[in-house]
Each structure stands twice: as structure tokens, then as C-alpha cells.
Length: 430
Ligand code: PMP
Figure 1 (cartoon, rainbow, N blue to C red):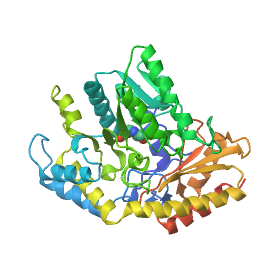
Figure 2 (figure 1 turned 90 degrees about the vertical axis):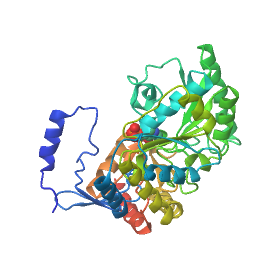
Figure 3 (figure 1 turned 60 degrees about the vertical axis):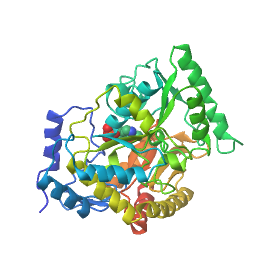
Figure 4 (figure 1 turned 45 degrees about the vertical axis):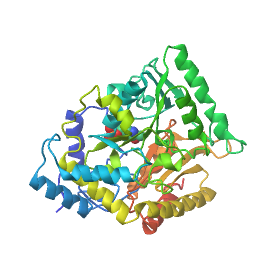
């Protein structure tokens, strides 16, 4: 039986006790009380197709993950300084998906914590203090990582002197576009400016932290070779590379299991969270022996819950399903089909300016005018609210608030894509 709590009353109760910082999505807030695969249900029985949530990566309430959590919780969830096999098994399995040498795991509880740990390690191992990020980046909520997250707003980042942002390699709306003969090199040159700007303020780079899907920038199709060129410049200046895989990781991009691999680079630290345990809070930083040794030789890094047996069981079950059910290959195939369908909609709907992405990570750039490419945040908002009324959930992202973030759980298949496309077609009618 579905929960009978009145949605409207719950909104009021929530507003009374929770801060305004955490705004609810959609004009008509979603009140999900049950999930199954790519669907959610509200108390009145309304079914919603989830084309937004990447956290339930193998589908809402996946029975194998539920069973693993329940079984482990019924046995033991105890001190992470005691021996437990599951976390070791997980570390063995996840490092097998990484390039050789990336084989040391540091378990925490969120993407923010994984990035915070990675940033501390980067400073310790390089002896440097500067951070290089991409403009509009989002990496998390700790004080140190909020400083690397201009996306969170000017209060979170009062332009700290140790941080410098790279120009995003945006070939749709940026300085160098799809017709440029070598946009990768043209954009990568900005790394020289960034390194020089840091040096002027007395900082050498400790790290480049990057989400290779550029999710916060509205999901970019990065010109081939850009990240490799930037990484080379950062390393030459003494910094290491932190790949924030919170968004692109675990097969979502289809082309590769990890976003950095799709971009042809090998980072020094890989961080992950969100989709790692299908909704259970877990975070992880993976790095090399030499890098970790220079940090843990000086610091006893202990996280009470990081890698506890229940979290490890949830993560292990999730990884098992992703691999066994070949969800990376399916993400690639369904993603290609879905994007082709959205591109076809652009023939009829002038507000679709660009369709970008890979696998089941798609950005639909909504414009006021296809010729000028002027972003239209109000139209993007109208479409997502209309889609929600039609029973389909998509989000919004990007620096102009105009990119539809289309990022469903990985079991999203062709049939689901067809449902979403039909709803998008209707929602885009003016
Ligand atoms: N990095 C990226 C790229 C993210 O998108 C997020 C969350 N949106 C984080 C880090 C932070 O993860 P968490 O919310 O688990 O702390």
C-alpha cells in the first residue's frame, strides 16, 4: 500500500523545518514513495518514468542490492578497523576496472568526501597549493571542495587565490566551435594562462580536478585530445590529475567504464560516489601506492563509516549487476538510439539547439533561436515542468540553466526511450 501522507501538507512541513537552500524540483514537487527499475510511484498511484536519476544506477530498489544490504545489516555492521571480507572483495573488484597501478582504495561516504581526500592527498604529494578546475565546476560541499565548486555560487567561492578555472571546451557556444580545425589545442592553451595566473599569486598547481562529462556545464562533447593536452601541461607544472567520476563513472558514458578512459587519459586519483551503491551513501578515492604512501605516511586517515560492511555489500552488489547485465554496453546502445530520436525532434522543435553526450548521459541545449544559439532557461524550465505533468522526469543544468539533463538509471531501454521521446515531443509543443 502506498503512503497516504498528503503531498501538499508534506511540502509545508518540510518548508517549516528545512532550509530554503534545498529547493524542491519542479513546480509540482515529486513525492516518490516507491520505485522499481526506471519507474517511480507517487502516493496517488501516479507512475513517473525516471529519466533523471543516476544514483539508482542499476534501477530503483534493485532486488539484489536490497537483499545484499538487508543480509549484511542483519549480520554485522561494525568498526572499519576490524577485518571484513566484503570491503576487501570490493576493493579487489573495483581496482580491476582501473588502469594498472591505480590499486589503492580509500573508502569514505560521499563524492564530496572522496574529492576532499583526493585534494588533501594532492597537496601532500606535490607540496603545492594551487587548484585547477573548469569554470562552473561542481565537486562537493566540504569547505575545501566548495572552494573548487564555483557552480555553488559566489558565496561558496569568493574567488580564492589558490584556485583558477579553465575555459570550458564548449564547441557549441564557446570561443572555438565545431568548425574550428583544432578546437582541442585552441582550448587547451588556456591551461598555460591558468598556470601562469596561479604562479603570479604564488601557487604551483597541486592538481587538476575534472569531471570529464562536464555535467555542471551542461554535458559537453569535448574535442578529442583536449583533456590529454591539459593534463600534460598540469603535470609539467608539477600537478597531478584527479578524475572526478561521480557523474561519468560506472559505465554510464557507454564508450568506457570510466569517463577518463573515454577521454584517453590515466589520472593519478579517481574519485567516485553517487551511482556506486545504487543509492546507499558510499564514496571512494582510488590512487597509486606511491601517492597514497606520501599521504598516509603522515596522516592516519580514518572514516568511521567509510567502507563499512553494509555499504561495501551494497557497492559490491551494484557492481556485480552492472558487469553481469552488461549495462555499459546497453547504455551505449540505448543512448545512441535515444540521442538520434532527440536529434530528430530538433527538426520540428526550434528550441532544441544542440544534443550532446554519450551513453545514458545526454544534454539537450534549449535555445531561444537555433541561429544565434541564445540559451533559453525559461523554456527549459517550462519543458521540464510539462514533462513532469506528463509523467517523465528530466533535470536542468549548465551555466545558463537551459540544458535538459537526461540521465536515467542504466536499465533504461529502447521502450523507455520511446516513451520519453513521445513525451518530449508533446512537451515541446508551444
Ligand atoms: N562531484 C560531482 C561531479 C558531482 O556531481 C557531485 C554531486 N552532484 C559531487 C562531486 C559531490 O558528491 P556528493 O553529493 O555525494 O558529496
